[in-house]
Length: 358
Ligand code: SAM
Ligand code: FES
Image (cartoon, rainbow, N blue to C red; front, side):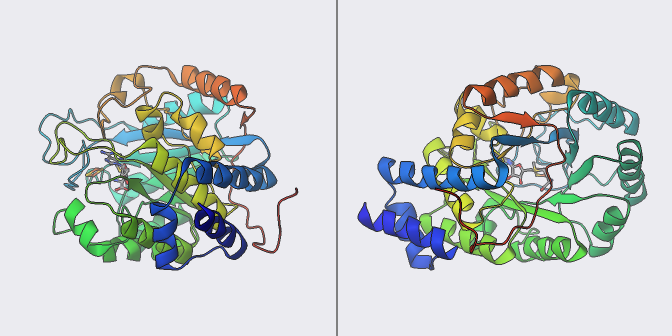
């Protein structure tokens, strides 16, 4: 216990730990150590963001994917997935509804769907940015070439989410088919940063075969990359994938890692994810109280929500966008926070010299 507290203090003071220290901290965690961590994490969260929770409207615009990730419900070899693509008009309609509700960031997420050409994607980004000049556009459409990322950035995209999934190459190979590699994934992340995107990475907690040593690699990779956003959520099995019978990740470990990420990179944009809300009815509230500061309600049309089934029992698949906003706002207010009507950009603030008050 004392060792855990000492490591938490060290992480806060120095923003990094050695591999051995990360492993000891993760393996030696306890409920009281976690509470100590969350208090510190909330202090930093309040220092940078107050009680304001940033919102991102998630538009899941295609569930076609050329990839075959073993964990993912929309992988190409799941014949049960009912495939769909939204048209440009349908996507713009989602943005219109979202804008009216208070969203100032739209996240376009999808499988790697070759049917959308580079030009169509650039036109789409440009159309959203011209209609909603005060909004940010985030893309989450997987691995692409440097030129493609650059073209989308020039068309107006502000941010890009691409989870590295695991920073251990053997573990990466056990989660993905041979044509996908950790090296390529990392290369894409460095390109995105170089081009100037606010860049997000992340990983699933409790993915099959994951150990504390793998998580230590994840934390060290994130420290080195210094992304502006990190999305982590529990692995949740999907019945139509090779990992159908594997155990899912836990709320407890996910929250602990959220707290650690907040201490390591205190001004990070850190979502309380839908996957966390799926395995615990109060998962998103717990995520905020562990240090997260972003929520990503679903803005996709209700007619397709169920079809973007990455994992079983995904929440919010039946609600209208307005209901999602209102429901999350109530949930946040209950724990002393509020949803912000703001782009919620990453603001670079000197660290670690600047200490939170108190
Ligand atoms: N195709 C894009 C990409 O590869 O980044 C974006 C879509 S992909 C479905 C978004 C994220 O969903 C992945 O990075 C992965 O971490 C997460 N995901 C997929 N299957 C999951 C599962 N069974 N449980 C939890 N998260 C999952
Ligand atoms: Fe492509 Fe999951 S396998 S989005």
